Length: 194
Image (cartoon, rainbow, N blue to C red; front, side):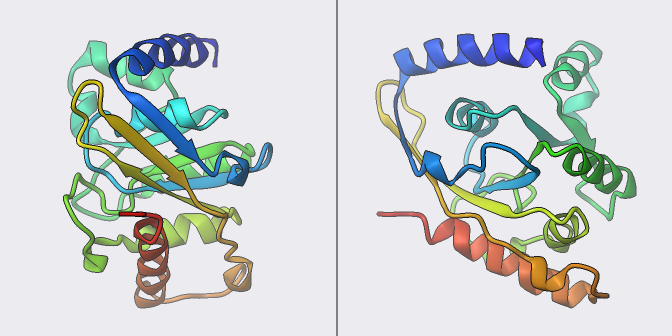
């Protein structure tokens, strides 16, 4: 992950010049073990802000369209990201996610699957809960608040881990996974302090 660390180092310098970044709840990130980092999604810059805010390397699930450009795809892959088809259940993306979690790493997911301006619980994808439960990993909710205008404040509010151990090794329906994903999404937006 040397490439990730180098890019993160330069991103910290550049983004701290361009914005005022305020990180709340950094102590809620476990220092080791697998976690599913779930955040709201308001800008294409969100993954960079999360990488700056979270001290551990994050492997992001990213829309497959970003991988069409071969040069960009190589960079994204080197940063630990992998593609997901947002239009259906992508078994390959689920397998990649579980591989990351089984390696005790941090998986980054935007539960709504795309950029949105305001919360709609119906946007929560059942796959978020499925991955967290099958990967036996806590979910760490994060809320990013910003208009991303230069020299304005970006607030990153990191919530306490959500443990889903009560569902481990249970057979759940799609609707049950969807319900748990809604709970996760609701916990993200509850971190909005304005």
